[in-house]
Image 1 (cartoon, rainbow, N blue to C red):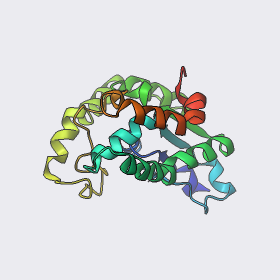
Image 2: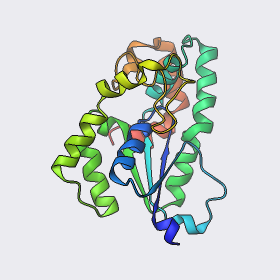
Image 3: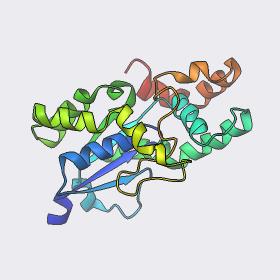
Length: 210
């Protein structure tokens, strides 16, 4: 159990800011094991219910938009369906499963922590019963700002190339710096209607007016 107490699971839907949160946790807890995953692990037995989980989620319409851009695909209906499948098995379905089963979990909504480090710091303080000093907040925010990360990933040509320590990939940050509701200027009206239909239940429960 001592090992479990030194572990934090960072679970996130793809393209939901999970890598940022992962790196924030690594900065805050250099002596802990921070496990990053997009999938629910079947070997998470009851003992792991005691391991704190910090989960990230985001409007699926923006996730699909960001995922397509990241892979340099074209936004036609076939490609959109492929990325819907990709999201389904990389965080969306398992986020809901975890939300129903796990109590020792903090959900961080992308739309609330986008360009708002203090929101993350405050939530982590409450959830993990810690205090994050002003100097440490400034240090982490400076190190993990969008511009700093963009400089770091210039060496990677594609999303398939990445830093094994930080998990920052090439093309990790979109051309609009991860702006909220970027799907509005990317998809056609028909595709937006289609995606809103696909994700109607999830968006009503987790995204809209939350």
